[in-house]
Length: 92
Image (cartoon, rainbow, N blue to C red; front, side, top):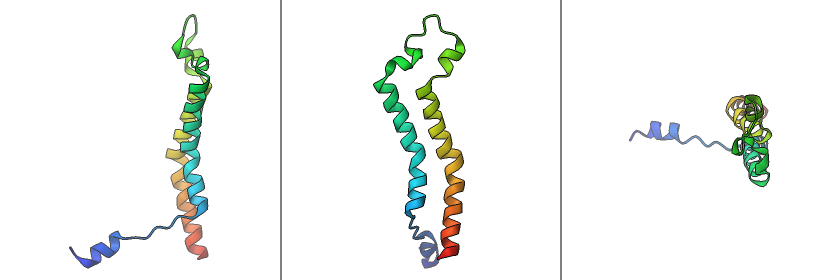
């Protein structure tokens, strides 16, 4: 293996506490949503949809919180982490 390639692959990437904090918001929100659904299963009307309309079944608080956590982690976090790393590189 070429030494230049190895040195390029071994990029030490120390993340600051701000980057770590931003990175865990989405997963923690998703875990909180799952915990909420387990603690209060009666909120998930998919389990007992008798006489409920589509929107009543579709718009359920624990599921919405789960979706928001996943979307935040997938769509927002990468840009924030990139900005924070650029700011840290410029400052230090």
